[in-house]
Image 1 (cartoon, rainbow, N blue to C red):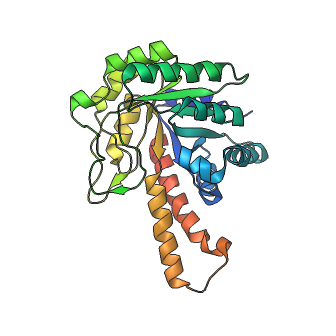
Image 2 (image 1 turned 45 degrees about the vertical axis):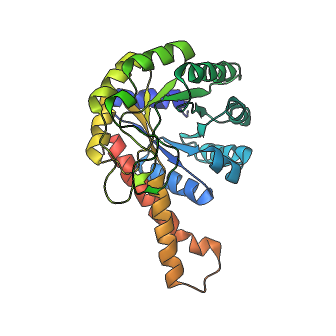
Length: 289
């Protein structure tokens, strides 16, 4: 029997590992994620941001992931990534997503709490288990290659999530998962690795919050920080930009070598393989393989 997403997260935490969360914009990304996870026999989470859901289709994303889960009897889960309104959280829950993220990181804390609490109440009334995640601490919004840290992102201790705010937020909202700002940023820096994570802060937040932690903006983070962050309390790691870069670079190379090819399924094979390699490497790291 396929475990629930909650069960998969708890099993990973018990083993001192983390689940990989990878975003898709098309079916090519979905197959890359599934093939990499199946090769390693690891559960995996597929995510779509609001923009990605608009492109793929909200109900269509559910149907695609559900079809793979049922055909292969495989623990592959679907998450509504970075959702900025209660209405769109409700849309994803109604469509059948396994989990949703309300992203109120740019809002005042109490407003973030009020909206997240509304999302939790709606999820609890859904008639099935839907996990709700929320964020405290702004880390940017775009999954792309950057020349500098995103505007508005602070990396000094006073700008990062405090254990006290995490505990208060979880207690007031009842969220199942919590995403802190611990030095992570969305996107990945072009010329160097991303800022280092505050591992000690991760441990303190996990202890204070009492729920599994999610690391957003994983692309560009050094391997050592992933390993230590997972040991400290990270249960899910988000990767998107690394996949996009691999896809685009492989696509450019293929089209340069085959300028007359017009069959999409032939053009897409090498970009899918490139994404799959990135995903497999990250899954191996997150699972301690």
